[in-house]
Amino acid sequence: MPWPRSLAGQMALLVALALFMAQAINLALLLRERGAVRMAQITRPAAYRIADALDQEAAGRPVVSDRGRVRLVPRDPITATMQTQPAVARELASQLTDMGVRVAAVDVAIAKPWQYVIPLSRFERRMAMRAAHEDGPRDSIVIAVKRTDGRWMALAGGLPREDLRLFWRLLGQTLILYVVVLVPVLWVARRISRPLRELAAAARGYSPAAKPEPLEESGPPDVCAVIAAFNALRLRVTAMLDEKDRMLGAIGHDLRTPLAALRVRIESVEDDQDRLRMADTIAEMNRTLDDILSLARLGRPSEPETEVDLAALVDAVVEDFRDIGETVTFEEAERLRMRLRPSLIRRAVRNLIENAVKYAGAADVSLASDERVASIMVADRGPGIPPERLDQVFDPFFRLESSRNRHTGGIGLGLALARAIVEEAGGRIVLTAREGGGLVATITLPRV
Image (spheres, rainbow, N blue to C red):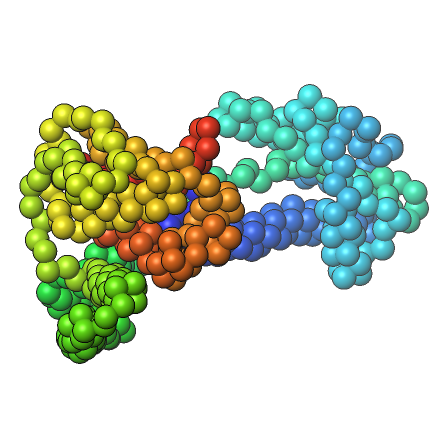
């Protein structure tokens, strides 16, 4: 049986197992007590009859009467085919000793109806026939006692029948306990687990872009306290993110202002080569600043989702690179309507193509789709990336020094920003080695 994963299931199973163990122990104790009572039912009357028979013999009266059960026999009536009962024999011997009756040996066995070897009186035969007619053949307990003078005394009697009502009573008690205990336990567990499930769903579905709605505080006081703490935490996180956005906006404004001033001042530099290098440095700083701000603001985009043609969007990005003379090809694809944030997806595709152009000189772009996902592939014939580094290159500010230096590789935010954009849209981006050399970057976006 699989272990339940829910709180209610685990509590119910543990309580059920505890009740089962308790009832099993209770049954063992009852059976032990029942065995002691059954032993007393067998041995105590037999001990009294044997003591009474010996008293009658000491008084000069015969041992056996028509209604008696104790009689003298020439030998031990218990045969090898009978089922001996040494525990009963020891108990009977102990009781005879307590009563002051001295005997040489006690032997007890259970005999089947056809194993009787003791001659019965007329009364005993009549009672045996009546019992057989009413209840069917019954096993008998045969008791043989060897006296100190060497003679044997024997008696036989019916075994007490097993009382099956004890089992059914215990089963009924168990079912009642399960109903009385498990129903409240399941109710309490559900009362606790329902708000916890809602809390887990709210935590998983938390989005910085959405306005935080307070979660209803329900359940026991401890659970209500956890939900209240979560509501307060979500408000604090949202306030921190708002403050971060304001700070990033201020940083972007404060940095772009002096960069713009520098861009104006370099126009007075007479050396054309120095002026161009300064302009490139300022442009690179602006791009780096844009990447850092874009990466920091992801998760709280200001651009709403709109329905766009993904094929047209990718084709427009490719045309931008063609306009500046880059070798970028695009396989024509059918119109593909999707809901997404076009500016961010365009930025992710542009970063991938830009990487391919920088490190391979050209890029091959294609688009494929099925009923569930759409895939954008950007392939190149560059030096590639070692397999053990394919995931590491998505880390911010990570660069492969051996093949991508500062001059060609920026500061290592392009792939990190592309992955963050794609994952924010519910998709994924992977890098794989291209057959024949090079690299293939694949963006996979869900269509629904």
